Length: 299
Ligand code: MN
Ligand code: MN
Image (cartoon, rainbow, N blue to C red; front, side):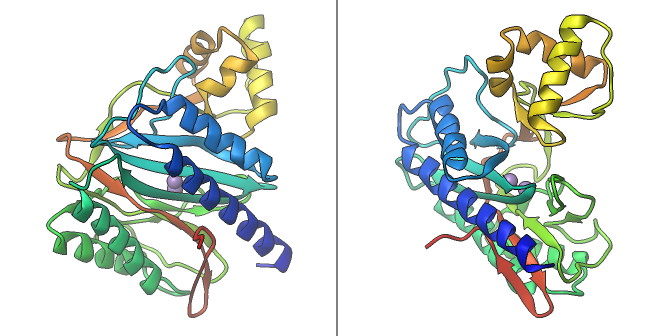
């Protein structure tokens, strides 16, 4: 990886981490999820980066992909277990990071620690040449030692320019992925821990979308104009229904129509299949010969 690319990854990672911490500082009993998400995304823009995806603020048994809708009234409450998952990019070079917090209580301290130690172990193990299966086995061993399950069908991923999920999956269990991590890769590693089933299912309520075919030509004029606007604004990165509502007041309807036609993908909220509580911790890192450079840690 050349110095210019590394610098962009470092900047994106730092801004994502700062935005994550800023969001966490806003999460209190009674705070609107909408306000927190918008503040995180505006923080990223003010610092000279762009959101790489909508701020995810999944709560309790939700593991991933909850972002507030344009008219969302959800508020955080004491005892909520919130996963603050934030992405920023600089010229397409992405930092993707999350932390889990508990609102005004301390019931899930060990569950939060389990994903934290899972990530720490992954960061210790990963270097050029390491087998994906060895990473998964290490993470699974640590999370199991806390008495919890890793979520097997949520994985880390390779990052490429303007591509959030670029092929390689980094597992949190053994026996699922084959392949090798190579020097110069940028990867996001994100163990999830749960006291539930250990796998997630779709739970409806999509607030995040992504364009599947930029060259699609919807035949109805209203759909076509809207589609051209979202291609122009978001390209191949995930985007929020919330953001689209500023482009067109009919966005909720148009997004449904476009996803039915297969032009865009709708990401449903993902929740533990047995409604267990879920924690997550994620860092982005650059793989070196003898270890990693983590881009998303702040002091
Ligand atoms: Mn993430
Ligand atoms: Mn990720």
